[in-house]
Length: 377
Image 1 (cartoon, rainbow, N blue to C red):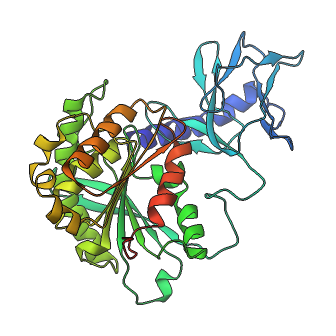
Image 2: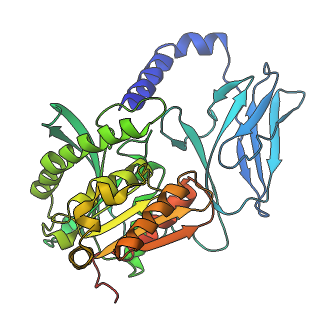
């Protein structure tokens, strides 16, 4: 919420000063800042006549390639070929982190927003905007009584929701540290992923609820202690206010077999720390690159780990996924080993890559295509 407030204030200030600014500084020439070529190389440009050094940063820019300046003050660099995916990027201008002023595609996150560029492949991506029936995104406010604040959440409603009387199962989908309730929509393109899965018959129509996982402040190091405090606060918010709000506002099914919980990084830790504590509420679990910082899972979940037959009878799917280059891989592997040692049925998916949306979007597709369906033997 703070990020959006600051961005809005900056925009208002810029608009209020616009007449003087344009009077003193004529509008710069229009140009295309990003060109994605047929061979999947990509050219980036930035007009900055007074700059001394410009480099490209972000997921797409391994090594921070430097841009070259022409005699008109236009900086440019061509990289690639780049593997098809949706990448973030920004410019470093004389040591200052700078958004692309010619791009309106922005990923909002802490500590700083970044731009997005889509590199298409030969076949449509899982998040591609296809000619299929589309769901809708609702932005809701609810009263969080546990902290006495009004908070926001996003809700995905599947295609045809408004024209039907059907009730739907619900996936509670959680973002990572530094994100907000709109992260899975803005950065994850979850609505398009769900539209495509449903249209292809790979997922059942469902409601997806995306709350704000930051209930208490995290310290700058995002330590295990601050994450633990936030998990406890989020648990109270989810159980006391979010689930009841959703179930009285939308045509949501209310049985445990019709509730799933999943999330990335911090949200993956919340999926484990909150979801697995409440098998009376949830039956489907998807921790992605989970921020699980304890290696004593048997101590954290004695009832879960000590009663495998009962636990396995309640869990429909426990689907853990993490990239082998993720800094949280060791912790996720430890969770996998603890569950295996305790006889808890689960799936551990190891992909390439690291702690990135390039992994989390496919993880969502993989998880969503399995939930609320008969469990495989």
